[in-house]
Length: 420
Image (cartoon, rainbow, N blue to C red; front, side, top):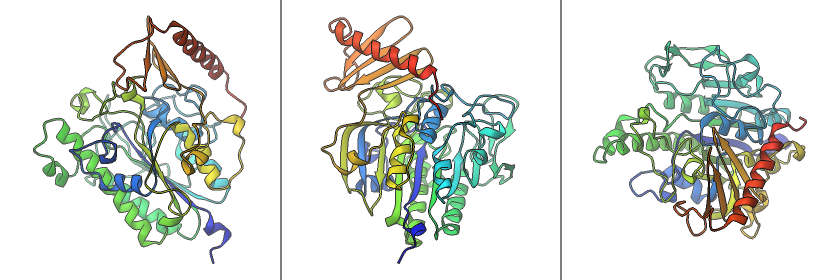
């Protein structure tokens, strides 16, 4: 018989970086090979209208960790990618790792952090017993240097100490550290945040996958190799869970932090949002709607789809509910999705969702979505126009006004942080 501690579910979050909405077979891709992401879909519940809280890295990660809007926690833009930088997730914020650690969970970050370099912002101060990875936005996957603005600097850390694994592939090191953590904590509940930097640039997929996709046009071939590389690494973690007889009692969550990149360093693209408009940094659907799924073989449905709306900050309360942990809902913007995950008859717990990225903001309510730019607004009905091609703001002024008011009220609300 399992002890009370052992009966608590383990939790693993697989978080990918700049992966487009349609870049998984189960989400419409026909030219990629993603058997392990597909497996999570088939063994769990897949969302078709799931959103990141931002279309860029750090704010999306901040919401995942805290269950709160990035504007409320003071991280609407990118966190520092160098030690002397000041921006990041404030130490006063309560993370999901801190909540689980208080309940006896072993906690680990493996991969990309990008939530700040100050001591109070580092993983060790935010509830992680163990951390391994890079603290900034991206690294070369073999030298582990951050090259993107000067001076170039090495960025590989373990438990707050700089380490050197020159020439070793970062995604392989992530698998190594994840397997070690799982085995070391298999007799107690654990939380693993497997925060990949793939398929974010630099596009350095494994050689076998570069060869597999050699006939695809550039840059799709390079991007595709990155997606299949991280899919394979996720598969190695799943295999290890099976080896340790842990998979039935492990909550597995997957999502991308935002849409695919069209930056120069990403060769101008390579990813796909399918029918959606826009990409990373955008408030159009292609920037914020992401693939997302949850599998928990012991307690949740298998091979089901939910079309109801959810968002990254929802994972915080969802995890706590599934783990049977009490928490203060008044501090959170995220809503538990447990009832919705268990029954397709449940409505989304959200009346509306809001975003602000730079000078652009957006709000969604029901099928309607408004995007506010510096000097104009656009209004779309996503049910009839998923590609956001037909601006209805002039023909539906009342709906545009209603959504504008919701957005304005949200912006006023997130100015003032709720009590912790």
